[in-house]
Length: 276
Image 1 (tube, rainbow, N blue to C red):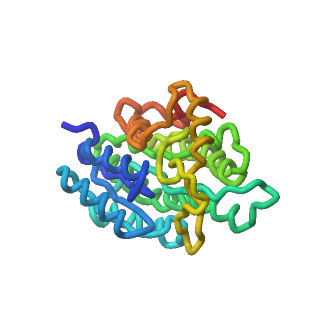
Image 2 (image 1 turned 60 degrees about the vertical axis):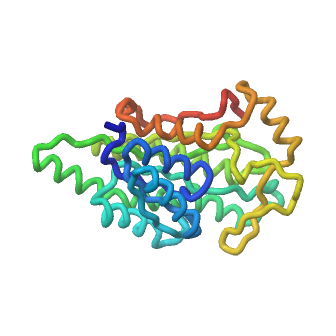
Image 3 (image 1 turned 90 degrees about the vertical axis):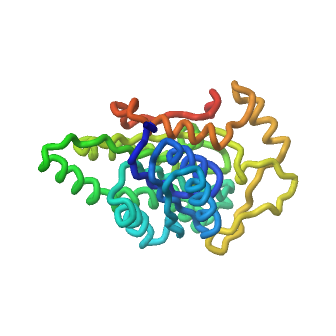
């Protein structure tokens, strides 16, 4: 039997990159996954890949910062699969600038996607979890251990020049994790953070062009890294290279395993030994 057989998982931002690998990994271990992306096509592609490999998945398309998204996301899990067991708050992006050039829009957008969106998703999940625990106790059944994994970054632990908004948001994720671990311990829910270092995705791939962008709510956000800067950063990593999305997903999987049922309020750094 697979390690996550019958578990129901929400993974935000799972149409591409690390989130896609997280969804694929959890599904390969038996979880039924609610896949999310801003765009319908990437979400559908992840769902199709899971189904083709014998898993179960459904898409919930939308922006995690929309006011109605959290209820739709949680509702999709409940309506489709009857509950939820694992929540991975992964969706996000960076919108960098030194502080004197950082706009209120940039600040708000990054805190909204990395901190407010997870808060809303977790708030929406609480009644579902509490009700399930009450029903299990009333029936005399054991309360299963549920998992929350919030995604952070080493920028949230040590800061990073040009990323005051991102570093502040990711530092906030640590506080959210630690507080919720204390609130939800009574439900037998573990709440942990995985903080990524340099991982090769479309946001960090080497590019000589300053015009590489993604579109988020009509804003053209620059992505990619100067190849020389990328080489310099990789040289500072003790393992000598950036991580892969699959390796990042593996770190999240560790916090979803039954073997981590007594680990809570912790931050696991997945960075090849590098710390800012």
